Length: 291
Image (cartoon, rainbow, N blue to C red):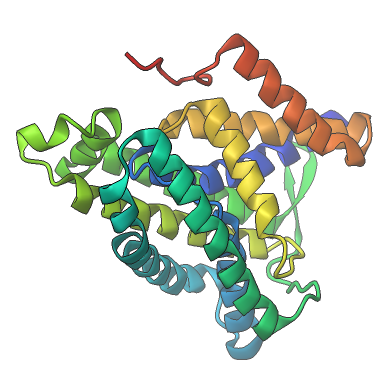
């Protein structure tokens, strides 16, 4: 049963990683913005859930209804105010990558500084549904199971939205060929802003879910940014299904490493797996080579 525990733990962790990465996949794959402040928004949502639960007794599930729309609006505004001028002046995709990295690197310190000013550098956590549940002979904390279930539900809802709606089709068109999309009447700037905001909503959801079972502080955003980048590139930039599979692979790899080798080696295994996939598939597991 030990192996079952390890695999189940890895799948739960991988589901959370996948949800975290899906937002960045939208922001980079559609809006073409490499958002280095991404993890800071994860932590900001975690702190929002923490404050709502500890001060007002509001369930983290209800906190999702506050965090996701608020983060969508904030990220949409960031794209419109900060990123749109960079997009318009960029003479090439490479130039936009450089400008967006520099801009979001500065934004990272702004958000992190605000969080440190309000909450300090101490680690915080709260207890929500931290009760054991038996699944196929394995014991799992209910909060972890609930977080993984909600992550999968949100990921499925996003997939259906992108595949079955006109807005989703337009977003995919902008992702595949932003130069040709305007030829069929698609406002690339508007849909890029929407995708950037939608990515913000997803990162807020992941932050709330992570806060249910994770101890965190204001300086941990870079960890989530790094995980998201690894998953996005492993799965294929802009590929939501790829982010899901890569997130599950990463979660399983971490869980197996911690169980059978050493918990301190999880980061090394992450990068080893990342490099191995890129050597075999330079565009990621489900990415397509540029034509």
